[in-house]
Amino acid sequence: PADWTQYAIDTPTIEGLKKADREGYTTAFHRARTMTACPIGKGGTCCKICNMGPCRVLPPKGKDETPEERKKRTGLCGATPETIAARNFARMVAAGAAAHSDHGRHVAHTFLHAAKGELPDYQIKDIPKLFAIAMDYDIPTEGREIKDIAIDVGKRALQQYGQQDGEILNVKRAPLKRQEIWKQEGVIPAGIDRPVVEVMHMTHMGVNQEMEHIIRLATKCSLADGWGGSMIATDLSDILYGTPVPILGKVNLGCMKEDTVNIIVHGHEPSLSEIIVQAVQDPEMIAYAKSKGATGGISLGGICCTSNEILMRHGIPVAGNYLQQEIAVITGALEAIVVDVQCVMQGLAELAKCFHTQVVTTSPIAKMQGAYKHYSYDERYGLETAKAIVKDAIDNFPNRDKNKVSIPTEQQDMVVGFSHETISYMLGGMFRASYRPLNDNIINGRVRGLAGIVGCGNARVKNDYLHVELAKELIKNDVLVLTTGCSAIALGKAGLLTPEASKYCGAGLAEVCETVGIPPCLHMGSCVDNSRILMAATAVVRDGGLGDDISDLPAVGCAPEWMSEKAVSIGQYFVASGVYVLFGVGFPTINEDVCTNYLFKDIEKTYGGRWDFVEKDPYEMAKRIIAQIDAKRKALGIDK
Ligand code: MSK
Image (cartoon, rainbow, N blue to C red; front, top):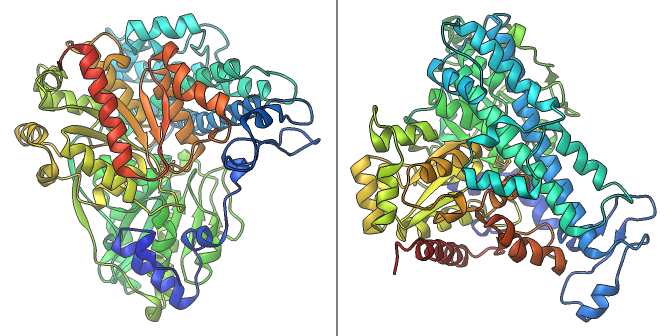
């Protein structure tokens, strides 16, 4: 068996993996130790878009080839390595953008039908945000019924998916200078779906064969995600389910209890999990659980971003992040894992067979071989479906094998719920909501800069380690961290989402955090909520003193343990929005120099943002991030 302390920092994960070894279960951690990633595909130089291939064009660097010899290699059709690398990169962007945007479409669809009064279990919750978004969408509000405004907002949001001409609406929220750059480059998407289709078309065999142009269209696609589908997902979820405000939450597998029916929701879309939150609180359900021997009632927890959604809005505990999904099953105390879309491992179904755990799939687009049950979730029957799932889990409680149960006790407090609106209220006060106090602290140097640490866990590296060490190193150097997704959960487990974490900070950041009463790492939500970071950056520009574009800010982005295609789309929309973005673990084009040089260097001349890559050294990551922040400070003239 492996020494799991080399592959995870979190005690429940390490203990779960040891238990897997003892009892013969297999997880992604185990598979990562026995399967090697293909170095050609991983570096972006395998082309498999036609049936003459796959052409494995470039071997990994370090083989006995001169750069000249490498340049001469092509695919069977003559496609150059940089075209192939760019096409592969673009397809990752398109897949990521499609996932986020389809999530947004689903939210908009639910929103519209809820607004029409067709979904009895859903009501509009945040009226002020409804008015704000209506204004952004040019929808009149004066003298109109809330219902009519909401219907128009829902229709307008959905209309942007199929729009063929013009511009998606949210781009006009960006700083004016940024919009000009995008206009000049021709990368403002007309609609949300079209650039995804365009990327799939232009990367089909024999279409776009010019590296920079491929990246340009991939950029447009990524903007359709960040400023389009993801932003719609965030905004409409806020209006429908409530905009997050700071709330106390808990994280880690200790949320599961020996005397309760344990249910975990996992995935990304909040529509069903919002209703499951209601179902598990129903006194009849709790009484039913008790009647089956679960004397403590029902415990609900979450994994990945579905979890972040209900954590931020209801304080429902987080069981873990991406790589804890299998560990949760291995506790032997999980009655049901209810999954929707994205980041759900197929290995769950096989592992669940070793226990009594029910894997319940719920999205019309996501079934799983071997799952216990599938619901093609229909919001018209929200509570009815949620109750059926919860009842099934309760009925499953007596099937729990006590001999297999080992529930970790670890649980860490955290303060979450920092929507960009909330941050401005906390900084500027209720009636003068503003980022200016933050800007002033950046100008006076108490806060050196801002870093978004986001993204997944990756079984190829020590789980959570890069997130946590990087964040600690940054806050030690007075960099305020904004975090989302599984990164936020990793930082939560490490205790960095509490005001007490100011003890890890440099003196300047500690003073600011203590004065405002915030943790040095701010949990801003799920993967689609990276759009909140875009809005926060835009608000910092708007409130003055730090230049007139996002690219002027001492602000960076980092996904140290990314694994999902969505991360590539997120990274590209941040680069296109003017941000330096650093990836760990691997970079999609790294085996090919021309495209990689373009993404790491030349693209900065156009957008003011660029990519960078450090395999797995969090201190080197921090060094580069801080150097970038310092260079921006110098350019602003706030550091001599
Ligand atoms: S869930 S995309 S593993 S962050 Fe949003 Fe986590 Fe990455 Fe999925």
